[in-house]
Image 1: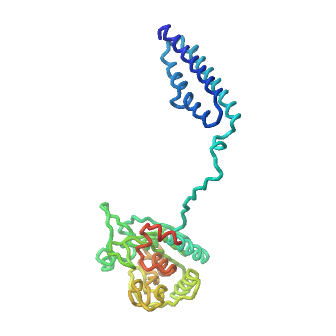
Image 2 (image 1 turned 120 degrees about the vertical axis):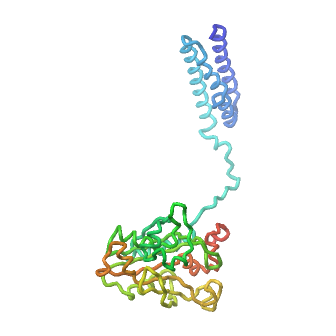
Image 3 (image 1 turned 30 degrees about the vertical axis):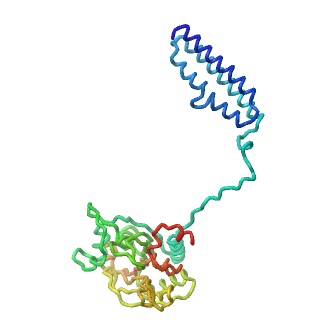
Length: 342
């Protein structure tokens, strides 16, 4: 930088210092002080911009001008600190108005599906069950084949499926975790698996393409239907806090033998008939049965030594019964008018 330009930079820094001192002495309130600070030493402040120009000075003169700029900035900062102490430590002390109404923040809360899931987890933990999880994107082997549903089995036709290009699929039930859990933990075993499942089907008041289930599995020596019924009754009594009318009727599921449908009397219409129960007065709630030997073998468990029961609880339908919800589609609608009731 030429000598005259060097002098210009020195004069510029001294002028900035003089103007700042005159301005800060005229300050009468904290708000004005903060505006002055921003004007001079903010990110785009006058002094800040001038200090950035120091690098344009010749190398041999740069230390002297740089020291001058730093000295001025330090003096400015000392004067600002003194002025802030004069006007108060915080800007809020000046601008806060206690008479202005506050802003109420909307707080989130737990979804009804999650409320029931947590209650079920507590109930089953008290009975010695583990709480497990499994992948929502599942392989054909675990979703079907390992559950005694080979490729040519007609049971696959009842579960219209979202297939992926890599050959995997969105799981149609939480049952795949049965085999995964047995392979990992062996027998004896007690566990539940809450989770989201997917089916490609038409939606109505009691059917949805995305819904929630809770799988349950107990494997040990000498497990019978009596153990299954006892656990189911304990579950329903705890979740509804009352005695619930149930019925057990034969049902076919490839991964259990024998298989049953456990129905409860509709708590929406109390058995008189409504869209939720398809005008029958009963709601299919818990498909269940004794674990098929093929499933035990797929989980590396000897069916000659161990037996067990499994159930698939319709978690979404249980929520509907618990809270008197007459349309399953409301659960996944995202409508806050619905969700905020819980």
